[in-house]
Image (cartoon, rainbow, N blue to C red; front, side, top):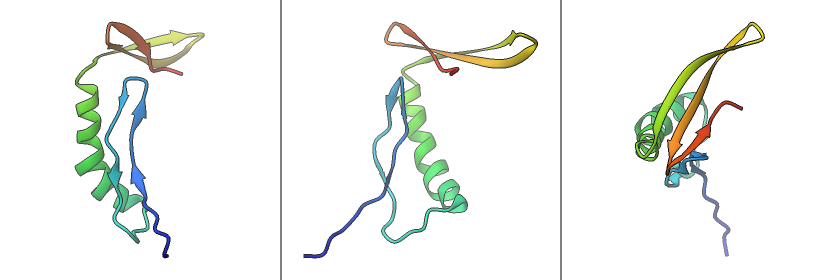
Amino acid sequence: MQRMSVMVSVAVSQVGMTELILVNPGVKVKGQYYCDVLLSPQMLPAIKRVAERCLFTKQYVVNGGIGHFLCSVIFQGKVVTLDR
């Protein structure tokens, strides 16, 4: 019996996960393939579907003279901070 393997791509976060996206058999996933075949047409729309259940806020925080963006998500009534 021949063994088969499957490569998938999925986005997982504190607010949910996308469906599994199958990578075509035998494909070497490099930057161009990832951007043109997986990310733009498949991953980004799936991430948007997960994210549309959330309310995102973004603020610029200065701490000790160093500024960075702090992102929070209100998901199912809870605030989840994405800055780690």
